[in-house]
Image (cartoon, rainbow, N blue to C red):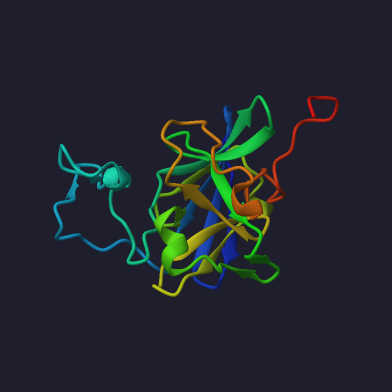
Length: 196
């Protein structure tokens, strides 16, 4: 049996929670900012997903991008890392991070200009799904370019451009400011009784 529970975030951004046999899936509906058609070669598939032409720049493998370099993943989901325990991943299995110079209360992103070359904002649109994450910990914050950045526990989340394969955590501890995000928005840490 599926139950729909509407939840409002940031005024016109709403979440609908669908409880399914495989877990909890949350879908964002009625977004504030949507990706616009790109004239730079990105093609839309029959499903509406952005696709890069073959032979494109690896940084463009994320499809449609916002003016400040953010991207719209198909989903944000619960993952597991052997060193850090439960973590948050995008739909391609890449690790998501939080930035200590951001704010969680109120939610605010302070990653701008050069910072955005390596740390790609994770954005929400009408098709994003949140898999096996607590809806009470999810939200969105407006960015300067008009897009809506996903928040976990109030913290804006990012993908590290130098993580080359799913599950990699090469951004962990970068500059003493960047950390893998846990499902509650805290910094992911080794489970109790494990490792250093």
